[in-house]
Length: 80
Image 1 (cartoon, rainbow, N blue to C red):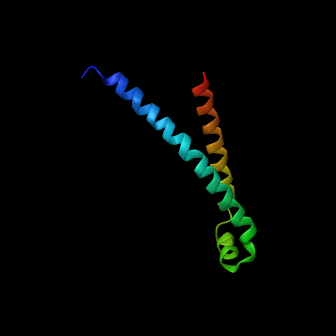
Image 2 (tube, rainbow, N blue to C red):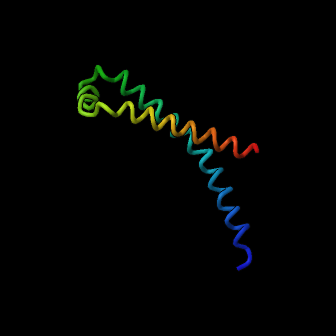
Image 3 (spheres, helix red, strand yellow):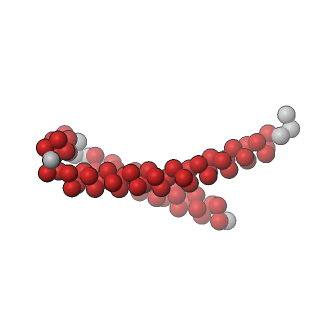
C-alpha cells in the first residue's frame, strides 16, 4: 500500500520512454503520407480523394507540428 509513489513514477517513466519511441515513428509516417498526398495527385484515386478531402493536408501538417512541439517539450523536461 505504501509504494504508490514509486509505482506512479515508474509508470510515467515507462510511458515517457514509450512515447519517445512512438513519436518519431508517427512523425515519419506523417511526412511520408504528406508527400504521397502531394506527389500522388496525378493518380486518379489520390486526386479524387484529395478533392473530396481538401483539409486533409492541413490536418496532417497540424498533427506534425503537434508531434514536434510535444517532443520538444518532453526533451526539455527530461533535461531539466
